[in-house]
Length: 356
Image (cartoon, rainbow, N blue to C red; front, side):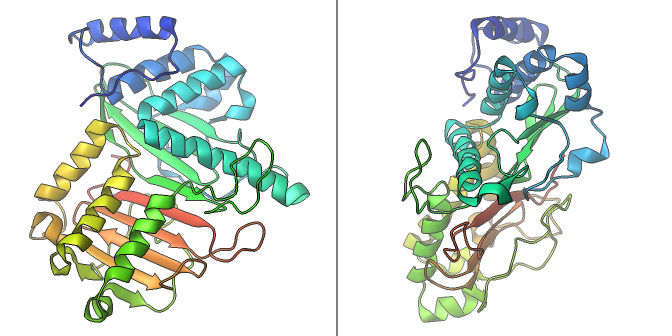
């Protein structure tokens, strides 16, 4: 179902929606789609920038920077950072991000940005120029409008969210990267997430529930390595890794275990607007005829793979993969206070093509 217009949008911005809908020759009485909502919000944000800001914020759609993504701390990134915007401009940037995500996804993104402020306070001078809840960059590729193609990147430490809109339709939303350091907050600081907070709790807890439910025989198939890798595969690469599927097949799981797989997949999808999440799940059901000549059996072709420890606090990793998508999750690094395996990286990638 199409999403309502973002909560942050002003009355003036809402009026632009009706102009957009009229231009696109669609009924103004229905709810706008995520792509239409994003187009309106992007147009309004760009209109509120001065010429110098716009020169940093907007580049050609086919610019090499569009597929240059990463989630590590950087002093320089593509686009215009929130630090270099006025308060009204930041509000419009948030309206754009809110249009691109579901309410749950937007909430996670904001919580991840708050964790950067927590890191800044915990790390002190070591965090200079790298930890900042406003050091997140917005880039528009091409010209937003009811016709044509344009892209959006919202990126900073532990966030890389990438979108393509074609003729008002959100056609791609990957790579979708989110991270959390700390994965579980251990120290309460004033005005910041309290001890016990976990931004990516479901992404981790459901996987532990699944792997610990496996029988010894199932575990022989699912566990692909005794130690977790140091990082997700192809981090920063323009396209997801191409490798044989590993682990245990969905068809080899019990009904309860299959339910956990579905819930894990839905957790990642739920960060996106309802129509995007629905399309992802629909592609899983029917598979993709363009995907490496695989025979498609819906959910049965999905594999779950695990590496590393079977308990929290020690390095662990999992992968969920089918013909149309791959999810990877790794938690091996310590947090800023030295707590082991308390630093998550996780990503959803589109095997039919990121940055389409």
